[in-house]
Image 1 (cartoon, rainbow, N blue to C red):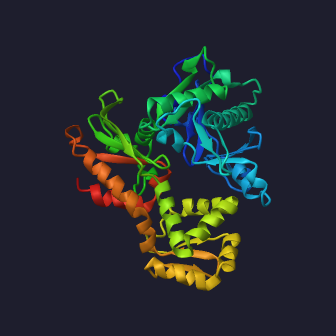
Image 2: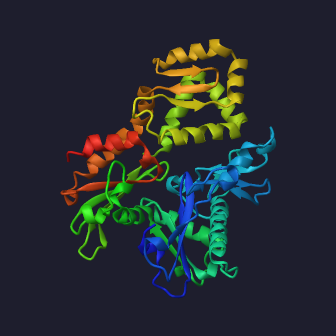
Image 3: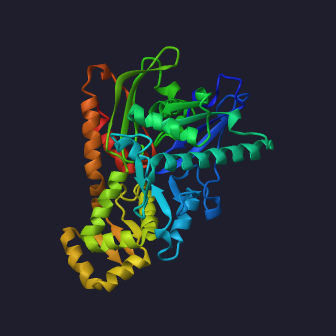
Length: 424
């Protein structure tokens, strides 16, 4: 989030907390009204501490007890779900990637349902409220720890929640309702909650970043000093999970930004690469085998997909190296039970490539050519969408793109954008 969002002009709030509620990962940052500048913005860097890691965000995963009450969120929810005994997970309600429901639903309201991994459905509003309440409580806990003041509570805080710009008004209102249900704000004080557009917050932040913080760039000058000057036009291209979210801005003389084209987007996000990976598994091992494993071993499936999530953002395929995904033992055991090496060879022959191998009955090895093919459908959609957008008259003279979001870290994605648009 940008400084403009994190520093409130109202003296009635002691602190401002901005929540990034993402499709795949979530987190928050906070600042106190009396302390301006980048140094005044704090982030929780201890996500995953109990699991032996430390990250700026935690997975957007929610686990509820069988009765629908809150159990855990983030790394803790994923760890608990992964460690359930056989059959135990069937009673608990586990949700992941549920934010996409707000983008897909045509009739979003208080009665909209979400389906957990075990097939049970509950109100979407309850799922989002549980998640926001957890993030709210964690933010207050961190602020109390940092200040030593146990009297801090939600009434002292101006809350900011970022949402995709392509969301319908109903989806934005839904988030506001979920925040109320999470007791972040009261009905009598609606201005305590600000719904901010993700691309705008991201682009403002990018303009203040030092050049060395961008991929393949150097120097301590900010982006605003180097190329984001008054009169400059740019696209903020964000990838919030399963979608593409594009906003076109022009920088004004006073440093503010003006939207010069309506927000556009489409179903071209990182989760589409995940879907291609699952299709590859099905071609290699058989649709029935993969479906059987996914339904009967959801925790191990989640662990495998989390590993792929991280590997797809890496540079191995871009640099011509093989990507290795460690398959759970329960999966390899299932394959062995249903035909073993002969079954694998039979399905593997239908892959029409030697670029994919099952090594030591443990690793699914994907060569660079095949790994890049997993990206092809979504990259074609992204390039076509951006190319069509640049045909509009008001975007003539556009000078640069800001790529933001977890999927933007992918070297394969960055390379595709450069190859298709660098000379424009």
